Image (cartoon, rainbow, N blue to C red; front, side, top):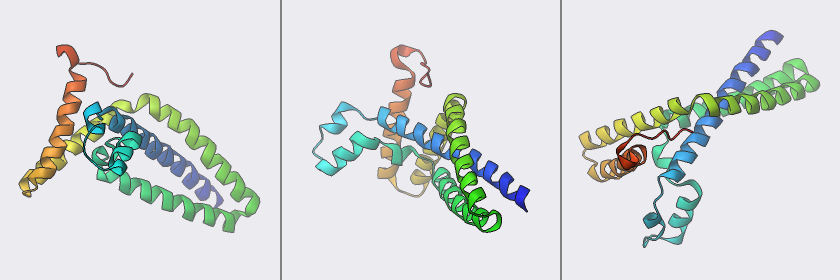
Length: 167
């Protein structure tokens, strides 16, 4: 039972690091998509403030990543409570420490090696959602997503040549 708990903590450390790195990538991309004209619009001060802090992060984050993050967070709480009950408070504290330290280290690794996967997943999700919205008759939503896709294309092909945005 004890070894199963430690394997679960290790797995959750990897998943937590992945979700945090993916969230960081969507924040970076969301902020990069904000144009100066977006901040000068007639929108409410609250909307402009949101754009300045997170950009278009909410719009470009794939729905599956939000679900995965929620499952990971709930699983961490449940596994830590279980670890404290089965292993005692000292080992429970140790398991929290291991979870945090290993997640920080693994997040740095994911930040370096998985950026291409992250941005590819965002792009594919955006294209898929736009297509589904067109089929469902939600043209305004599809147009908004296509606007963001056009911005990505312009960023990737500045001066007529593809640029690497992951460096």
